[in-house]
Length: 186
Image 1: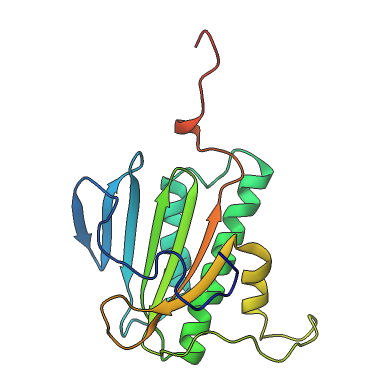
Image 2 (image 1 turned 180 degrees about the horizontal axis):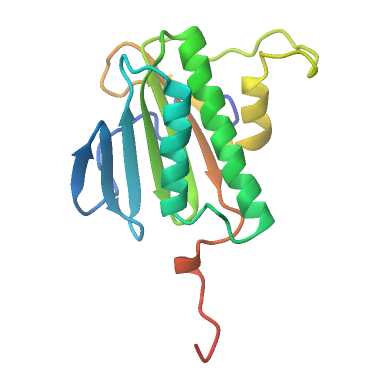
């Protein structure tokens, strides 16, 4: 999988419960599906909602806390979680600036791997802007994704609705506590 690939590599926006088991509940535009052993999907609906960037960061931080990414067991884990929050901010900001705002944020987590998906109504894939000085504000979102995400890209929505899904994938440097092998004698 190449960074920035817009040809639809990977999971291109399937919002079904594929691979998840367990119960689904809705509360305030939030969907939680499955359990940690099988993976979990969380969805935040955003159509017409104000403060999308802050809402998405807070939503993601709460999920990362539940999944053991925050507060982090190592400095690298804490840095990785902060990277995720930065990338969520960048992708949601891009949807606000270039796509009439995001429709929803979907987080898919399984065993220390995270996929972030931001849905919007603009079918145009993200395009890097003209290279700018890092000292100038703005225009660095895709460069941030290139540097911090394990992979990222965009694809048309699976349901044929107008728009796209911009996605990114990351892995936690260490395994969450509940997946670590216990030392002998414990």
